[in-house]
Length: 376
Image (cartoon, rainbow, N blue to C red; front, side, top):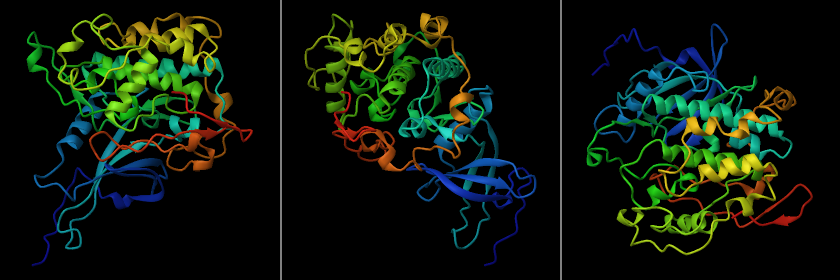
């Protein structure tokens, strides 16, 4: 039977864009750099996987679209439009859907993977200030990102940070009954996952994103993720070796979490500043990282408190990133960065709950060819 020629006036065909190169890939699908065939504007196309959907359009994609249309902010990636392919017998009458975003030339993971990119302290302050501004905005609008990691922090050639990939994001509801706010804890890429989620917490809030912000901030100096666990148990072990023992003394009520008695929690003292001191020379930076990597989420800094920390209000003051970015002749993405340029070899884990996590790298080579261990 012939396919009826159906008109979709509010959803253009993706053919109006010319794909140039692939800049991202994951279990969610693929991201392409593309150019509009008429006005020549460059955009990013994110393909929504539809092949395994049995009940229509993916709920996670609907949620991402709704959230991105709500969040209009300089430091949040802009959703321009939604496009489609034609339904044909070849795709079993199930057209592909593409989200069209503004194009950003780099992601933070790609920049940090490149040994030639060296951010000054003032530039690091600017990056973290923009990231905390983005988090303050989404949390003020009662949105959780739930997938904080360096690869989801985009930076334009003009040095503007854009928080991206809201595929796991969701709105939260403020109620007096804590049992009504129960969300899945199978979120956040393992290396950036906070201890409360690893221990089974389902009644969580914006502070889960701030843990990821702390990991990203430390990564600005270490150049690779600071806690690279193979499993959830291993990740908890790395967290306790860095942040100290998890017990009711430092975290009242932690023994009530579902997995507290099922996971092996080792004793140890808190060593965040001690272990990072050889990388992070600025004492205010060390203190902010320490506050963001607080085990008890109720004591962890939120975005507003972080923005008021002395780190952002002491010399050198935050400055634009143009001095560093103008030296780059090509885009820097984690996907396109050669592994030989990555600190420690640089395989990163898969998306949460979407397959087995990649194994931690056991070491790497610095610019002089000397072997070094991963940070933690």
